[in-house]
Image (cartoon, rainbow, N blue to C red):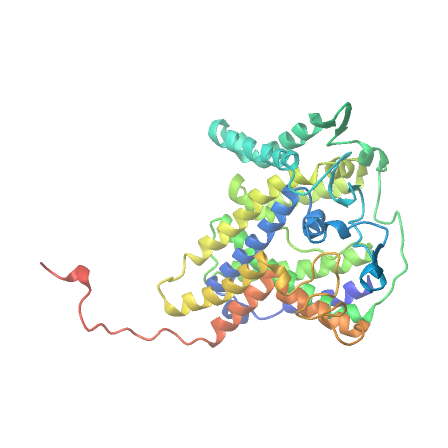
Length: 438
């Protein structure tokens, strides 16, 4: 926790960067790229939840036919003495923590455990989409403004009345275990932990705070777009950027004191603003009060955590793609016929979208830490002994930076915007064909 407290001062420091410098660093083109990369990256996360959960999605490689027989708990003994070889013992690839169905990796939803992407899980997430479409077609203006919560509750209801039956045994997708285990009332001082400091993690944590800084800037730009406010030459936008970064830094500092994780902006809210057309700050304050109230009443938290991941994924996928649309609208306000602007977009989005689709070009596969060939710390791609703690810290920071789409994409857009010269004036030898008279 002290490490989080110290690293939070990076974001606090960046909030005091002069407004003129911020404006040059983040023109609409760069802001639009940041928001689009946020939307693209988070839409993929939403789809992982929709298929059953982000953890089981990222370890789905263990269900590949090449690794299928290697997944489990006991080691494998390979007897090659018949061909003059030796008896070799191989360690099995451990399954994901939690329920293991058939010795392989599965996603949990209540009492049900199914492989990632099972039709039952996809169908529950799709019920949220169906309700969103029905409300858009037949709902009243008030229902359309509340479509997010109505669709989510509908998906929760469908999951609650659904069961997975195999023979005579039926299991539920929603159980009340988490609700029963939750305390009636809880406060931040309910538990205490000893404070510690882990030096090698400082660098990756600083990179993480840089990532959240860029995400916050992009999200605030998306909020202005969803609120139909201009971000170009707008002093209020500059103040919002500085205030948002300062708020994130201070709140992350106090979150560490409360034994919580650092916080950042919540990108789904951009989609909520765009859909409900409500951008009032009073509504934001009211939501904050409700969140504090729900945080004290732990039973409410138990109800929320009992919603299956696939239902949450059906909603968040819809909200996250609205973030991308906000970025697309911001980018469309610049001259896309400009060679310079097209170069900035091509380079930044090329890498940003690329690592969003294939993060493993730089990052490790889940549950195989340190084995990425790009920067191995262990495994067959490293000739030396395993990385030290300091090397792991450096490696984790670099890998986090390169595999986060809205971080590497935004930084590339900023660099290209700073170094590329303005477009040269084009002199035509002949008049455009549209001006030729017949």
